[in-house]
Length: 239
Image (cartoon, rainbow, N blue to C red):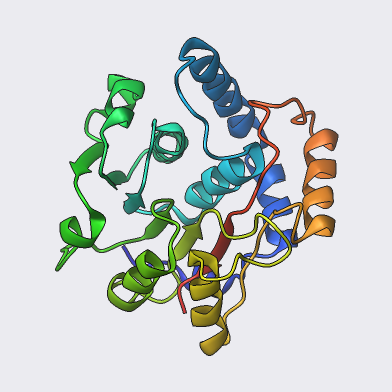
């Protein structure tokens, strides 16, 4: 898939994200209700993304309309369900999930998975070696170590076209990434390429966080899907 010039040139900024909340308000409301029912009906399911992170992921997939999403790390499938619902609502696209454990298989309904989802069990460093995907959206939420980050910025990122949206989780648990962490590696990589990013992290970007909460409240989307309070994900376009 070729990302349109508008999508590739549009930075992921607070203003852009706010506009997506307004653009996809009705669909997002439905998906939030679906995810809430999934969470309440599946007590063992750990929701690893906070609402803001999950919603922004959904909104970016809706707006960029990827044909191929690669997800690294799914745990119990919370993010997987959000991604699949975005593809469903787009009416096109496939998700390829790579993880060491296959818990997500038990938490994705067949009507979401069929014809849309492929689960690949194994270490992504092996299962994505010499991959043949033409990645249109990359979602990373796996081993949060500097070593793993050095692998994906050094080996995987060069296989992804400029302009493709990327999400990396667990970067901003505090104002700055932890020393010797995945986040430090990714931020250094972006800085070397003069590439910006967006985060809804309350710890690192309180003004952006509060602005998004205000937009959600204005749209009557403020009631929590789940009660996570941490939002350390970062979003950027591949330089």
